[in-house]
Image 1: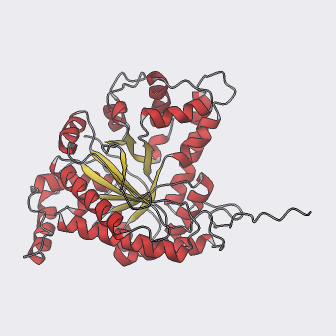
Image 2: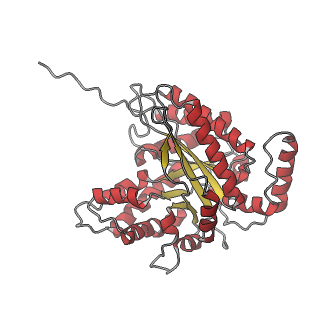
Image 3: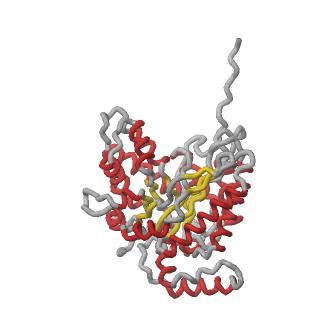
Length: 413
């Protein structure tokens, strides 16, 4: 990868600005000595423990850290377009578009090549299918076309969800057994990072200790294998918004999940500086009857990070997870306003929040994909997302607050 891209530094303390100085530059893999000395000091503290990442060479660590730092470029985020053919097909068909490989290719090319998109994006998560498709603008495969624009390409390597028997619907993700072989193929195709999602739920007795341990151990093992194959692992514990739990319950659940995740990653010898966290925003359940302000939700998110997030991880990219763009952007900007002295870059990795409004533009178009209309709306959405990542977005009204669902009034007899 060659070339240099710079972004304006974020508002904040000198310490935060200093940490982000090295970001925003496409990986050059030239900081091996510094990274090696940092790791050696940490390894010296881990004698007799299982948090030793010395199986990775200084060169490999430098490569991983450079990619992770670039993904964590201030003011930039990730476009998540890794839905499989079946998932994106359902979205197409709901608005009258035929689910063909060419339609999927054209649509995703728009997500990558919208004018100005690279000003707001540091990375794109792809479905394996997209790794092998070409841009009809440049004639290049999408991974190389993205790199040429300053957007790092990654891939979703996990397989299908499996329901754990006897847990009331809790799940694990499958695909670890053949992961290394698939990652070799994806890296050869141009991917420089991967993303593994582990969905969890909050409910009566949930998430259970079994579900937390099983999923976080899987994420740690996935991260270890990724780094061994030369790919930065994005780890994604995804707590569902469904339910009527309050914000306090969500805080406790997310602390349990994330603290277990980081312990498992250290036990597995994962190189923390070469990872990225993609995580749900800490929110009350959609059906929660108690209202919360956007500021209360922002404080909850930063408090969770402060209590258990390793400072070595350079960035957090929040998923939208069922939030619309207005709420997700309002909450992200509030989080960044609260995040005054924390060392992490806090940004976005959104799929549905950005894409669902685009699909709506297809309705009534006779099966055509209105790419020009989509580009115009998508560019506006990315600007909103980037402003939120910088703490500069201005919400309207109650955007970002949790407003309890309306209680149905009894019908008079």
